[in-house]
Each structure stands twice: as structure tokens, then as C-alpha cells.
Length: 60
Image (tube, rainbow, N blue to C red; front, side):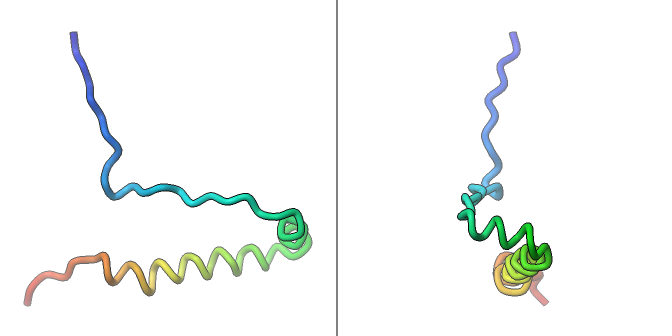
């Protein structure tokens, strides 16, 4: 009999999904660029601020 014990990798964190209020969902439907701008802001926050702190640089 084969038994597999599997854990989630430590680099996979909790997914911070949230419920958007009705007014925000309405705005996103009416102005799709608003949602794209919001997602771009989140992406840039992680890429420009958090990513350099998390990436290890080799010693020179």
C-alpha cells in the first residue's frame, strides 16, 4: 500500500480574495479600465516593492 503525505509549499500563501461592494462592481462593469488600473497597481506593488526584497542576490 502506498501512502502519500503532501503539504502545501511554503511559498504558496493565502489568496486574499475579497467581496467587492455592489457600487464597486457596478463601476467595474461601467468602466473596465478602472478594474485594469486597480489590478495594474497591485501587480506593480508586488513587482517593484516586494519582489526585490524577496529575491536573493548572489554574492559578488
